[in-house]
Image (cartoon, rainbow, N blue to C red; front, top):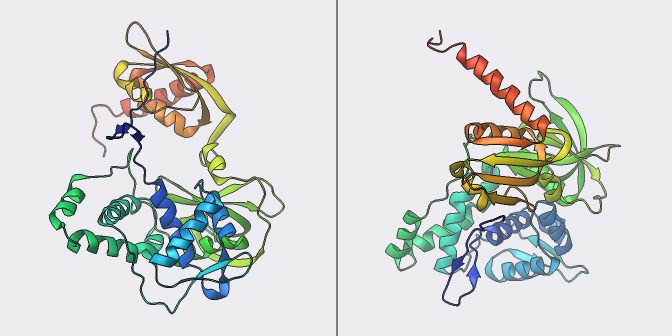
Length: 360
């Protein structure tokens, strides 16, 4: 009989489970940053902000965004709206520095979010959030109960998963121009230099959104006369020029696009039915962190863990499997098993040829 463990939730006195997540806070910070880019002459509606949040991977309703904006107007200096239909919102450039009225617990959460987001956001984006984080740090350090809240910062650490590379540098001006083009649905011309190319080339694209993957930011968009979205690494863009407005494609969801594996090297078929057997030590984490929504897991009589899952057929999947090669057997599909064997054999050949020798 198949057995499967699910990750436990934290229990509190009420008996209800409560999951701790930074997602609402990231959503608020992202909305706050979008609004700070909007001046009175370039008002933006709650509907447009909702669309931008959803295309950037946040699942949020129009009513939630409207509630955030109403609270922003209360707690921030400089946020304004008009009485048009629909209502337009903007950031008043002449306003004094804003002061956020938050509890010490919220300030502590903001400090933790800063520690997390600095590994994910480029410096140009963090610059817009700096006043918010500075205010939170002041509250934690000088807002009463100092030792208690400063101790908490010393007792919590956010550790990114996997081997971390330093993210490539993105010029702040380029980042701001692209974010504005995404927000306003404006077609742009970019001077883009692909990896390995000596000279950049001009490309005209309709930016549909932005995706961060392992510290690298990608603009997702369509080239003219094409319906197929593509990716452009933002750090390889040297110039940006706004051209004209375009109609955002109905039904396109950037989160679905990213989850489909489109940001990775894809193989055919694009999805596969993966069947693995792993040692108890190597497979234990898959009892808690699933490969897919349809994953089925069975602990065999010898304690080995058998896994069935539908996954994207990507190069990243192959890297992951090679990392588990000593403790993992790929039963299906056969083509994937052969690919892994070929890559491991090539790696063994390259490294075994230098065994006992020092690199000259």
